[in-house]
Amino acid sequence: ETHGMAQMGGPVISTFSCGKVHSPVLFSKSADCIITMEVSELLRPGFLELLRDGASILISKTKIVPQVITAAQYPSDTDIAKAVQGFRVVEVDILAKAVEIGDPTGRIANVVMIGVMSRLTPFDRFPVELWLKAIKNVNPKPAVWAGNYAAFMAGRDLI
Image 1 (cartoon, one colour):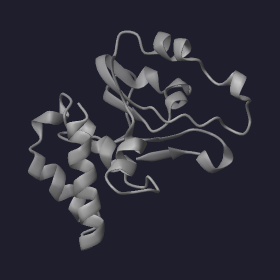
Image 2: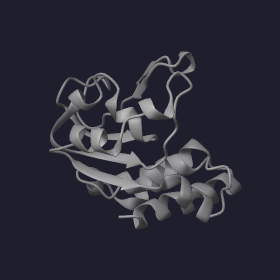
Image 3: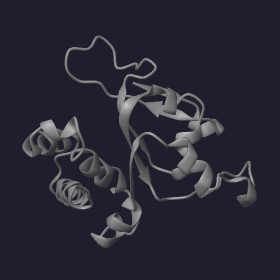
Image 4: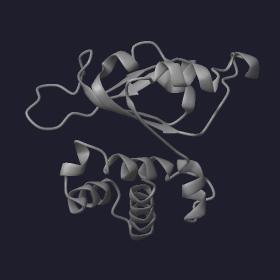
């Protein structure tokens, strides 16, 4: 489920639920994990409130200062650290890993992050083969699949 107005400068949130659920829309304190593709995303209103106690936060080390603020207004590392206290935080440089494995555009960084997530509880209960099958189903073209496979496995190796 995806909600938001990213093109208008607002937040976007996409949720995923599996198992015996009736809706992918999450309630407060029900999420096992939040993934941020940019450091300051986790500070957006309502995001951290979705996390259950002991949940994980996957943070991409990528920093992008929005056009509507100055670099001085961008959240400090201290602000981020305070906000994530009490959660398991995994910070990874997925963009650098995507470039390292041969994608100079960084387009497969999201698949690197999925690989990282697949190593965390409760997602580690799914066999690697299931993750790979799901990723391949999205785009089975040989060139795309080869890149996505490499990205997923590289993400798993980051933690």
